Length: 471
Image 1 (tube, rainbow, N blue to C red):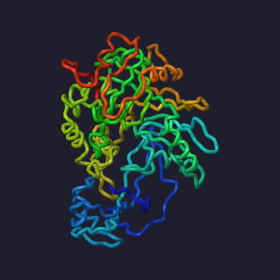
Image 2 (image 1 turned 90 degrees about the vertical axis):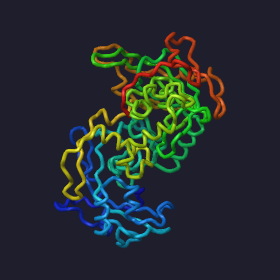
Image 3 (image 1 turned 60 degrees about the vertical axis):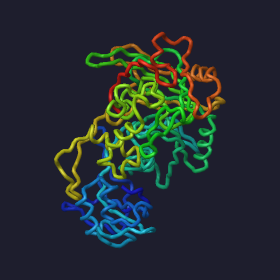
Image 4 (image 1 turned 180 degrees about the horizontal axis):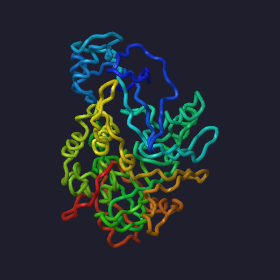
């Protein structure tokens, strides 16, 4: 719904329909949380969202704004809420036909249902007076946004530590991504670490599980990345994009198991630049998207080729990709999928959670079943951070999905970053923004690596990539 500013909280569940909540209530802390069946649940609570009139709202009726932009619930629900005083303008009940003006503050109190997240604890890899280095579980957002408030890294850490503790994340991981994160204990410590990361004096390594047999040896992808839809946060390789470089090295390849169409590879990834979704976009371009990536490995969005070597959009036009992706969440997303993670939430909800046929006794909202574990994860893990001068380094264990399958021999740990750093140095200087380059492969790469190390522009006869849908 709205990007919340001031909040009010009610945790008492009434047996009848929702009640109007117009007066701020006493805040309950810590939040009412239950750990059950491997999930962390927050009991539903009343919450007030506040936002000032946006330019596009001026001169429009209140009910019209809710109908076009806030589609989380039915039009009848919003109309009833306005008539009951659950939707206010400047603290006053105005009704559905009120014409919104510049400067108006719109408040909406509703019974909020947060989706459950994994009950896996936030692991602590290191802690000192200034910083906590954590191993973030997959499926848990970092910051409150969209459907999430208390089921976030920040709020979970606040609830688990003494009163007054305030965490300051220094790097951001997507909700479904797991791994190493830095959480400062003060603003000054957060700013210092953020400067190091921005100045590229810190190296980082991820591990991903990708479709097919990734080529052996080192692969350096220098393809520029362009954001083709700011609203959806969608990116792809484009000649006029921003400079981007990722170094890849295959850790293992596992043959297809009975009942599976394809084998998969576990790949080490060292992003040199920090573009949004850089690793996911480069792996897609190389023909080896992350195996359960519901966006960049989704044939419903990209078609059979999945954007492989399609630097000019000849196989799949940007407009087609944006249209298909928008439809995935537009009918349900509260702000017309303006928040990317919210769009993903809606896709995951339809794919994983099913309507139970029951409704909340307080707000009559349809209730959904719980998502399965495979719907709470993206097979991309922040494995390691280290200072370039070698003064410190922090690494997490490999996630379960990166370990060898049962009964198969394979690596269970990753060595140092020396080989990745050396491969990046041998690749030379980064190209300028908008300059297309050839993807470089190490001399020792397999003969079959040609499918994954190709020129920037698409070539005739490029075989379609094989994929399985997921994040």
